[in-house]
Image (cartoon, rainbow, N blue to C red):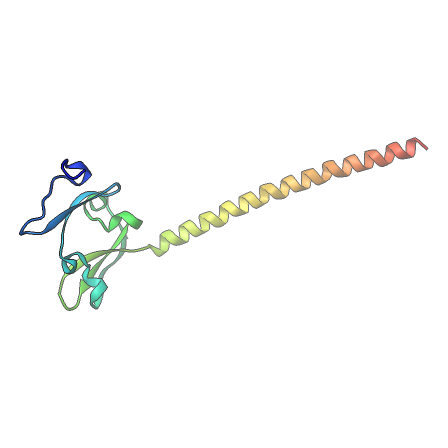
Amino acid sequence: SAAGGGRHGSARLGARSSRRFCSFYSGCALYAASPVAATPCWRVEDFVVAQECTRCSSFQAKTIVECSPTGFIEKISCATSKRDEFKSCRSAVMEAHVFWRFVGTMMCIATIFAVLVVCRQRVLDRKALEKVRKQIESI
């Protein structure tokens, strides 16, 4: 609603333009309306990775927005603006762990179904032999 605060609060846009952004996952944060301030420096200029991809601590997960997508961040130093920022990243170790867990799960499922197929085949073979024996006995 236009009159009531609602989910976005009652922040008014005035001479000092800022907006309140609320998200289900990360809560509310204040962002500058200027697109330059909202754009991370690593998107528009060259950068160097100052700290490799590491798991977010519980404090970082609550305070750094970039932790939300993957749970891992790396520290970036931008060359032109000399700013240090955080960037969400994917851990190679975690990706490998998830991959091997998937492979293991699929192998277990394949083994279960292979055993079911063998058992079903034995049941069908037994029924076929029984049927042949009854036909021979009836002669």
